[in-house]
Image (cartoon, rainbow, N blue to C red):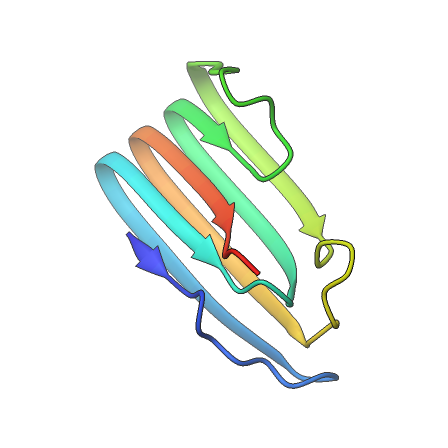
Amino acid sequence: TLDLSTLDVPPGEAVSTRAEIGAGQLKVVLPKDATVKLDAEVGVGDVRLPGDTPNDIDVGPSQDRRRTLPPPAGAEPAGTLVLRLEVGIGQVEVTRAAS
């Protein structure tokens, strides 16, 4: 689990990080107010992002998702988090911190 929920990204600023595992589940908790530029890649498995249907699991080869996730409605916008996630076999699960 990579918990970025308390990361403070000032407006107009950008920070980046990456996480990679060979096998298993990589869970990432995003800050509640940052714009996130996400690049998630799973060799064989599933990618779950905020807004996906809760029980929609699509296991398959070469799961690649590139998305820009704006802050949720009502959140005061912060800066931008650039996030690169890679899993060889397993799942990437990205959630947003509670308000």
